[in-house]
Amino acid sequence: GNLRKYAIHDYGNNAAPFEFSQKLPLTEGGSTYLVSEYGLSDSSYNEVAAIRYLGSETNYALFDVKCRYKMVMYENPTIQNRKNVSGTFNFKVRALRK
Image (cartoon, rainbow, N blue to C red):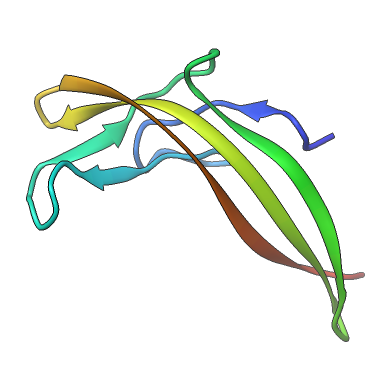
């Protein structure tokens, strides 16, 4: 049920699992950033592509989560210089077993 698309959120306003936002420097070492803009469309989403069970520890189940995203970002704080950004990421989850 988690393998689906989720909305991209304004930077720092994620509140639920699989919501995604980010802040990227416009230039290396610069003080101007691109920040994500809220949206859920063909050009703005975080998609959970795969969840794989890795095994268990004493009290935990371990999972690998693979995601791909597309988002519209803008230059902060002027809300100009819009760019489309896309990519993939993985993370591991340790869930408490009950």
